Image 1 (cartoon, helix red, strand yellow):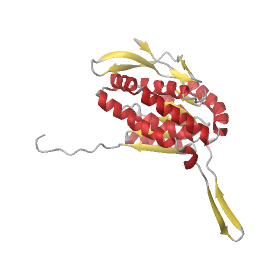
Image 2: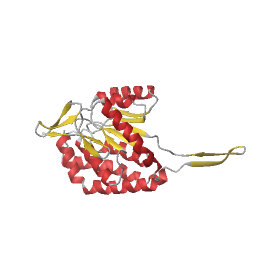
Image 3: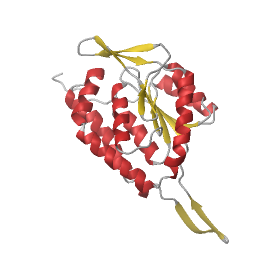
Length: 260
């Protein structure tokens, strides 16, 4: 039985909550690991450390941040089979489907390799009489991603890569049912050169989600999951003055052929 951890300041850290959630192997029905359900204090401490780490990361020029994404993408390619097997053991997808999950996340990492171009501002000459207008793209600071069970690699990568490439620090709260892939991705991006503390993985349940939504140092939240939870997260985040990007109730469309 494996006791999983959080990922704090570039290393695995055990939670002191004493609460755990079972992680099943869907192929056998057996409990193969336990995910810690972290406390509010643990989440807030992770955010405080991320806030400090973000200052230097946000001041790093986009070209250097993009190079981290390049190395990260190469490491994902190198460890594709390992990630797919890890994902399959917790989620139950077939290996080809699990590889597709990782691949679709990798494609977002590849887009973020172009961060220097995407982060350019705009300039308008003579926007008004004697007035020039310009815009600058700057990091928000600390942001959070709350990701679901159905895509253990793709959606965490959707959240991580753009947030980090733009100079933010990231708090990732993966589904407590499939946490191992997110933890492994955190190891790989550190190996790619991401400074300690810029990405924190905090495992937990609703208690941690509410702590994310109420923490004053988290400027924005991204969520993918069911529509009722999306509405709850959007409402509470907005009420606390946070940016919120919530995708609820996504559909996978199918055509049913007559021979079915």
